[in-house]
Image (tube, rainbow over the protein chains, first blue to last red):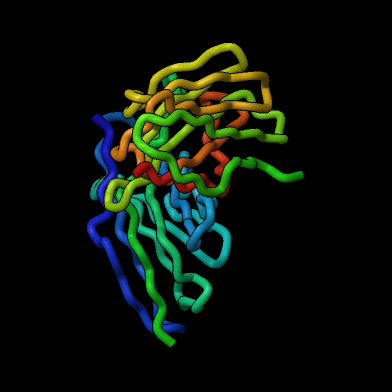
Amino acid sequence: AQSVTQPDIHITVSEGASLELRCNYSYGATPYLFWYVQSPGQGLQLLLKYFSGDTLVQGIKGFEAEFKRSQSSFNLRKPSVHWSDAAEYFCAVTNYGGATNKLIFGTGTLLAVQP
Amino acid sequence: NAGVTQTPKFQVLKTGQSMTLQCAQDMNHNSMYWYRQDPGMGLRLIYYSASEGTTDKGEVPNGYNVSRLNKREFSLRLESAAPSQTSVYFCASSWTIAQETQYFGPGTRLLVL
């Protein structure tokens, strides 16, 4: 069965520091991978997605993610974190092109940013 | 262009009461979804509607019913609320069931006492 693991429940970084949020997936075929961000009290907003092609994808707000098939990973990165990046981040996978587009979400990583 | 809207934003129910959560989208999307979000569990799919006139169960459908009223609207009903249904509920939509990007509403926070 498809699954997504986000090993880090909570991460704290200093403003201006680099960030990497980990995501590992379990899926038999080629996965379609997403990162969503949820600010406090808000819905989810798509940061970026990977379907095929270049394994390094760029998203909004200066985020990027790299798909590594050999490691079954899709880690999210940002070179310099801003205080406004404090939020919860969700990795998700789906079987695009299958019978249904059911997003499977990880449990989320809560990011705190220290001044 | 409001995207996906949900009402109400917050609701308190007593065990056994019923209520309907409303969702509407103005993006002309064909597919719509209901998720629940619980601490430490991420989002789990309750029901989805691939297109107007169709609905299917997701991962956690027990205790819920849905209605795809028209292309724009997709409601979620709790017939007899239980404390285990205390959660944040999100509605989402996408162009088609096979399309990649789902757009989410702001959520409804439900407390069942």
